[in-house]
Every structure is written in C-alpha cells, then in structure tokens.
Length: 323
Image (cartoon, rainbow, N blue to C red):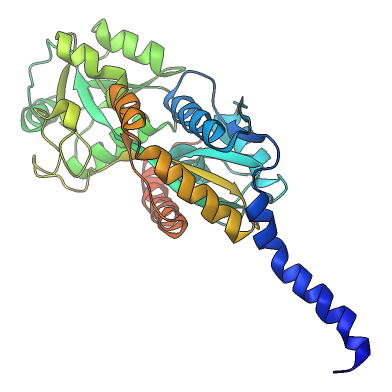
C-alpha cells in the first residue's frame, strides 16, 4: 500500500464509523418534540405520552413544543428544515402529512422527501354520530332518510379540509347521498352544536364522543374502521353496512428530518415501539379512544404514500381548499 494512501483510508474508516458512534452516544442532549397543533388534542396527548417515557428511559429531557398554525404546516416545516441528527422529532398526523398537500396550493415541505419516518404510534377511527332524535338508527336507515330529502340533513366539522369534513365527503361519494356541510372553527364548537341538536350529524374520533354516546346524548351509527372498536363494540362498521370503502382511521406517528443516520432512526424506532407496548401507555390512550399501533419505518412510509393517493381523490372530489 502506498504510504500516501494511509491517511485517506484512515479518514474513510473514521467517517464510516461515525453514524454508529453517533447512535451509540444518542441522545447526548435534550430532544425537541414538535407538535404542529395546539395543546390538548390527540396529537398532543400522544406526543406527551411518548416524550415522558423516552425521557425516563434515556435520562434526557424530551421537550414537547407546540407550534400550531397553518393547519399544522408551520410546525411540520420546522422539522423538515431541522438538522438531520435525531434531536428534532415530529408528531405527525394524517392531516398534515397526507391531506394538507392537496388542500394548500403551496406546501413548504414534501411529506415523503423531507422526513424520515420512525414508527406509527396510534390510530383512531372516525365514528358517525347523530343527535338522538334523528329518525335513523343505522346506516341503512340514514341513507333512506337522506335520499328522501336530498340536502336536508346536515353535518358539522371542525372546518373545511379537516378529517371530519373529508370523511363525510367520502361517505357522500360512496353512498350517493346529499348532506349539507356546516363548518366550524374547531371540533369543540362543532360538537357543541350537534349535542344541542342544531346540527344532526358529525364524524368524530371516539375519544371526543364516546362518553356522550354512553350517556345517550348522541347515538353512534357506524365506525369507519376495518373492525369494530373495542370501546364501542356495539357499533357496526361501514363494511358491515355494505360500504367497505368507507374506511378512514386517523393515524399518528413519529418522524424526524430526512438524512438522519439510520442507526439513530432504528434506535428511536426500537424505543418508541417498546413504549407503545407498555400496558399503562395502552390504557391511557384507550381511555381517550386511541389504539397503540407500531410499525417499521418502511411500513410507516408506505402508509403515508398510500394515504396520499387516497386523500388526493377525496379532496379533489370535495373541492376543498384552505388558501
């Protein structure tokens, strides 16, 4: 070997071992966990649950940083532009990763190119609920009623382009019915008016409505998931009603900036998967209507890819635009 080559080979060997060394020492400082929505919602709950457990295991602070605005785009973009070192995480959601690309004319990030998926963390299906006096107790009865009075029934959502709005648009497309959209500024006001009987229908996460269903203030007509919900096992799925294509489970997952060393991605995946399998974590999420679900990084990437295809069709059919 030429003596002149030895320093170069030594440098290459050092560089090749750098990712492994980084992973071995990771995390060596506090981790910033960005939630691109306001405190108090499902995305925030799941992030804080994961952050607390990671902090306890690794002895490093995991600081949950709520950066809401732009329908989740502001906080999401912060992670896309962060250094690829695993110290800035994103609590992703179907809305900011698979729906926003079709609602906004210009998105500052690419959901597939700008992020390194780590794992899915939780899912929650959408439940179709109705005001108790509505004369329909099943999907079949609702369709008969809706088709007898096209456009007379209405449904509430948290706003144009939100998951609740688009699931309802999917329902309209697949069943050939006309129901009128009443958008609100947030889930809270929308649900309040459904509970008051001002609006008749709403698609919502189980955690938001399960107590109202149990108390009789609302009735659940169907759940948009492949299987019945454990906490609402008496509620049939849309598939059981003859509409298997009405499947719209909200998913939540952890990502970081693209280019982060694979060893760090794997270390995060291993620990977050372990965290989501803990009985107390599963129980805490279940109380709020979420199921702890995990995946490999590649499986999470494929979920984002497939949902981009799915929601593009729904958004275009609905005509929804935010800007």
